[in-house]
Amino acid sequence: MAESSVNQFEPLLEDAIVYRAILRKQWIDEDTGRVKADAYFLRANEYGLSVNLASVCSPEQCAGLFRKCYGVASLEVGRVREIGLDVEQDSTNHANIIRLPYREDNLAEAERLAGLLAKRSRIVWKPE
Image (cartoon, rainbow, N blue to C red; front, top):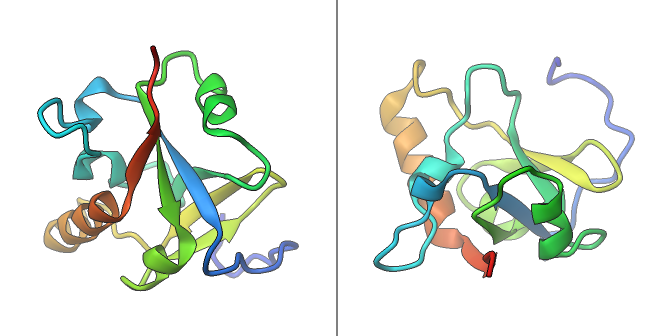
């Protein structure tokens, strides 16, 4: 998907909340219960990091979209923008965190930004 594609959605508000599904057990630090930076690395086939909009999807509904989900982390859009990234809505309930570098292209910057995203996120749902 080209970044110049015309987006039919208005930019998200600074205080909008998005959810990142934690799809791997190792993405959560067992000692602290916090999200690790691993949850915020862009994979080679991705345009951006997949997130769901809290305004139309509860944490439980977000988790239910996946076969196995170990938790759901929330992030405020304004806090994502503070570090030079953005959140671009692409459907009624979905968006992507964009402008992240791939690890293969710039490992240091990918690690720095993933760490900053992890620090700004908090777990809002975990399975029983």
